[in-house]
Image (cartoon, rainbow, N blue to C red; front, side):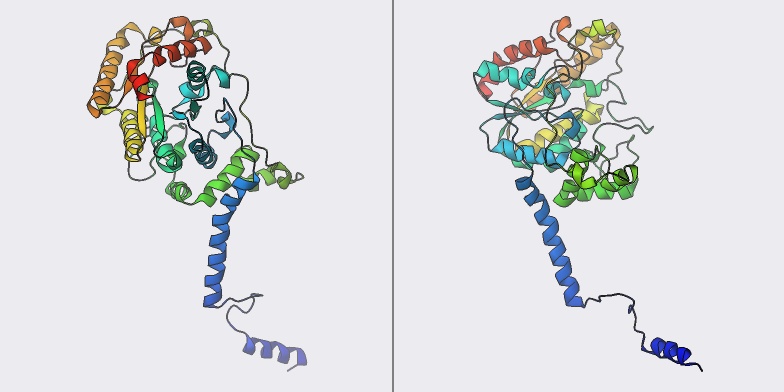
Length: 371
């Protein structure tokens, strides 16, 4: 046998399992490594809040680019608890689709109050099923605060809006809807993805990773972004400067009929069959269980846009909603329809419409008593 063969045989005799690894950890060392990683995962999101500047200032609303950044929304809620304000929650009707940040309903109410008394916690596209999840998982910080909660009947205007069609379609904020226990017919995401979403709700590090992805990588995960931009430095993207609310409205301030919209025969889902309405009720229950004082504002939906044959069904929905709010003992206002020229579409007022709505709400006895 050659000298080389003898050395090879000798090495094989001395080989131990996993001996190809440079470092092998004992059981106690594995425990220490896991503890250190867990501490790092817990510390990074906390430290990031101190490193990344966030000073909303007056007339702030969540930037459209951060609509899906729920870690940042939790941070905004924490900021809100430091202010002596009434918090206004809802979808793009509260957020202000056709207006600038200083023309939204909360800001119109601030003008009537003579100072900063209301805060805009609206999120663009946040339908009630998602709103219930947003409050449950990312709105814990606002526990015990006064809240105006808006309900937009638009989400009951068809089976698709109500998320009850069997055919899959991509709706807003799927990461906020129930992943396992409640069946949403049109939601078909694979279970592996759903598990990741569920973990994110209780594991801040996962939420922080999503925050970095949304805020700095155009909602593309860093690995994919790096592949698509092989010569760019990904670290240069993390500027620690958050996107700011646009000072421009997302749509032109003009009446709905000037945009070519015509009356629509809506296929309303009755309140007792509506998934969206059931989850709005759940959102109210979550807030009241946490000690929040809640005032519910319903509408005002653009009834001028409803075809004649669909109006009786809408009247039934408003009656059912009012009955539940009365029975629950919740202070509320079912907003009367605004003049036709004050709407941009089916549910969004224009700037003058928000001013009119704020004036009406301000003079509503139940609202004044709530304040």
